[in-house]
Image 1 (cartoon, rainbow, N blue to C red):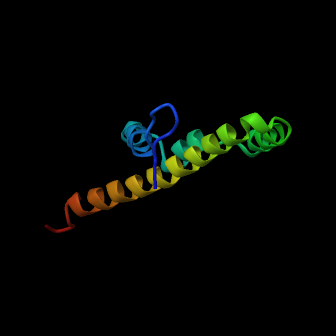
Image 2 (image 1 turned 45 degrees about the horizontal axis):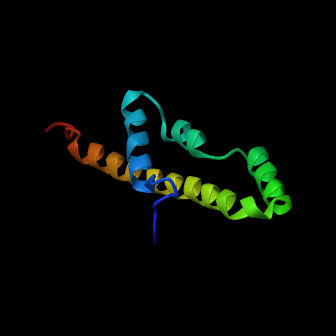
Length: 93
């Protein structure tokens, strides 16, 4: 799967960059909210795409990109959480 966005952005690079927010006190839910396209805006974009067919592919690629960034962020955040758990000192040890 090609994760490169039309302007050269990478799903992995964006998700990895957003992981830095986790080290600054933000929760995964906070970051996922930043990544997401709110439902109201998504509906408006899809309605516009139906009217302006010339913009439909661009809009769809943007929405797919945001979704892929969210999935990759969740994967990376999960890996980071596992690493922290394994690195934590064991009780009595």
